[in-house]
Length: 272
Image 1 (cartoon, helix red, strand yellow):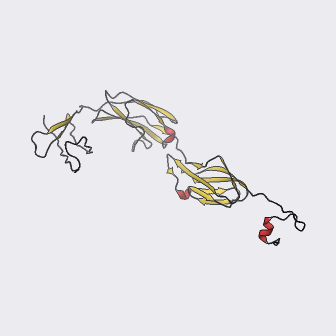
Image 2 (image 1 turned 180 degrees about the horizontal axis):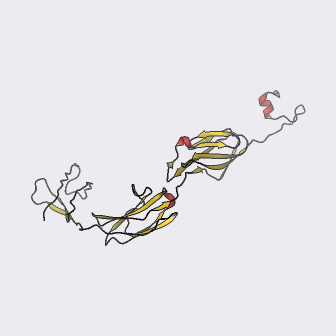
Image 3 (image 1 turned 60 degrees about the vertical axis):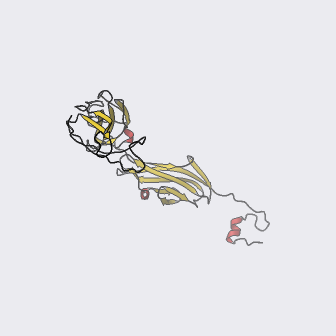
């Protein structure tokens, strides 16, 4: 057998040698189109009888694979089954998705032993020229297939307020603390400066992913969190907050029967 390519790996880890129980390394190995076998050996530099560690027979042709579902040019949404033909005994499959006609792909499933997988398109960016791609490999050579073009609706950012309960109730003067975020598969997360908080009673409250506010006026508040949706519009959500004023206690006094603590605080009723 003629050697078409050889590559030397030098072990430089001072805590490992050839008798170590395990040696991990990562290296790209070039091989010619005509390669039929890859052999891994080890031995001391200049040794005449290197030890054979691993032999991989390389198939002459890559696995042949074809996408069976989905077919046709139409709009898809939600959970979609992607199925392909069997690429051969022992083949592994990688499923990828593109929303730009195939210029770029992203992996949507790990290495699979099965020839079908269900993809949730509601979690992926949309477009008018979307495709699935299946890669099939038996170890070295890789075959591929792409689906027909289909469309997936684009998704605006959705904004969410995180709180311990649907409604919040606090006493007047207490702190209200809320967190929020906005995300879409198209645009990713919103920048902190784009998250704006407001109250339908007290107006603008702040900017950013966290709202910490004291001194809301007494009564029912509809707290709103608003962000650009990434598609020219606005996404908004709300959280109800009830601010309870302290009870008013009246003092019994012949001179001032209806006075309260506020009258003392303002000086309207002098202290006795």
